[in-house]
Length: 100
Image 1 (cartoon, rainbow, N blue to C red):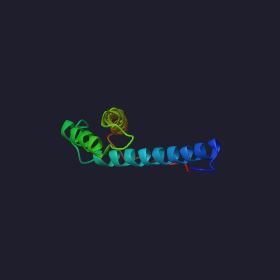
Image 2 (image 1 turned 90 degrees about the vertical axis):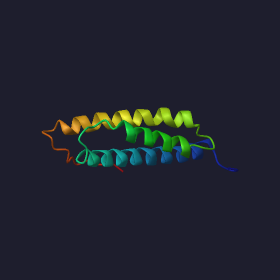
Image 3 (image 1 turned 120 degrees about the horizontal axis):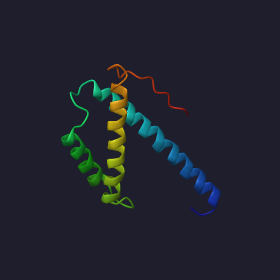
Image 4 (image 1 turned 45 degrees about the vertical axis):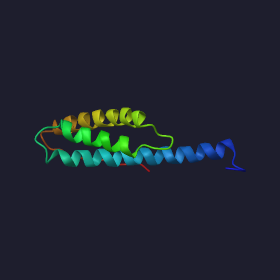
């Protein structure tokens, strides 16, 4: 990182943050699509599988317990979004626009 300024590093962080949000939006779109295949929104077995996967994938600077806490929030938001979408007269085909 020799020769980079604080502002250069912060711009890189901003780019990474933007990508994380784009990926979270894409994940939520996929979550909405799964709703048409599920009888119930809550799927504890699948959520446990997701949490085990993120714990296993966590390494270097990312601690497994941090990843699990983060994904518990993501899963909670996913369930909330599915509930809202399902309340639109049972139709979950929503147009989600990702601003770039």
